Every structure is written in C-alpha cells, then in structure tokens.
Length: 324
View (tube, rainbow, N blue to C red):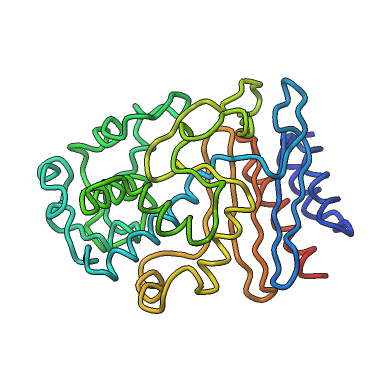
C-alpha cells in the first residue's frame, strides 16, 4: 500500500471507540512505535503505546521511555528567556551584536537583530539545518560547527520583516543565555523550570541519560537504530518522557509555570505548542482549550510519508477525545 493512499484511507475510515485502538492502528502503517499521553484535569493521565521501543531486539514500546523531543526543546528555551527578561537580566530589544559581538561581520544584520526577533523566528538568519553541508545522520555535538554553516551567508530577509522558522535562532539564544547566566542555560532550565514542576525525567542532552532508557529511532526504509546520534544544539537537544512533556505543557498553558509578568512576556514572544523532528523521532505537544486536554504523541519513525501519517493518527486521537 503506498503512503498517500494509506494516509487517505486512514483519515477517512471510521473512528475507533478508544484511543488505544487508534494507537494500535498506527503500527499497521509503517510506524515502528508510538507513545501517546493524554491528560485532563481532575483525572489521572492516560498513557498509550504500541509497536516497538527497539524492533531489532523485539522490545515492546514503553510509554515511560525517554524520547528525543527535538524542537519541543524551544518551548523550554523561550520560557527561560521570558524569566530572564522579567528579572532584567535580558531585554527583548538587546541586539545579537550586543551579546555576541564576535558575530558582527559573520552574521548579516547582527547589529539590528534583537532577542525578540530571534525568539519569534523573525531574524532573517538562515537555518543551518537547511545548509547543503549539514548532515542529519552525523552526531551534532559542536554547535559552533553548526553556526559556521551560516557565516557569510546572506540574510533570508531584513530583520523583523517576515517570519521564517530557523534553528539557528534558538542555537544563538542558547549562547546568549549562557553568556548572561555565566553558566549553562540547561542548568538554569533544570533548576528554574524542571525542578519546580517535579520533572525528574527531562534532560538537556542525550549524554546525560542511560542510553538504554531511550526509545530507538528509525528512518524508513532503513533498520539502523539512530538512538545514539547526539544533537546538542539548544534548538532541539532535550530528552524527556511523554508524561514529563505533558506536565510541562499543562503548566505552560494554565499559568502555573510562570508568574503574571513572565506569562505576559512569554505570550508576546512565542507559541504554546510545538512539534519536533530529528532522524528517527517525531513529536507533537499540544493543549486543547476547548476540551481542556493535553495530548502528547511520540513516534519513532521518520522518512517516507511518515510525517503525514503521524499527523493523521494524532488528529484522529484528538477527534476521539472530543467525542468522549
């Protein structure tokens, strides 16, 4: 069955009665493993899984396993920035050149690009992961090497004039946070964001965890396990369980993570949901106000038309929840 036909068939087919039945269906369509977390206030969270945590060793999917959450990491970076703006350690009008003066002449418009523009993906700085020399399949442990890919490149557009998603923005924000703090922003996130929420299964880097606790990742049509490829850019380096991710997302959306001033700053700079993608790893983290529900989905397959299938499965799960 070809991907496009399969996707259309899945989308149009009758909804099953339960989320677990829909999760089970995902595995019939070239998704190796899936984890789903659903949380409604006043009820215990529900965790669902199907397929494989590691298909080579036939280890079943574990809903409590760690997962590379990729660009969902940007939510944590934006929260950290909002807190530091609120306590006057940073200003949204600070320029890139002010905090990282060595980038003047290397990144176009460094003296005009503000922290606000970086946070909102309105800087015009090219996305280093789109560069011809960037290789997803290789470990990305030196963020300076990633940054060098955009040195001397023309801006995609003038600062603040357009929106264009760029991982380079959040790589640079991580560097700014490190400089202002005088220590790693990951330590700050751990102390100021994770610890207050009791999130003991969220980590800044893959190197901080027992690799055996991490879900294996696969890129269709290959069977190579991509679990041990490290990605250290602040734009997408974090590892977490679905439950920890869901607790964070609930707190971000219900106002319990930030005080009123911090929340106002955050609302002005970034979004309240995110998706993530790394080779072998797709993630979706969203809160639905109409049903007051957090839905997290992790899928450990990329390639082919797996993005389409992943979103179809996710949206059908939300439809089931709305029907309840």
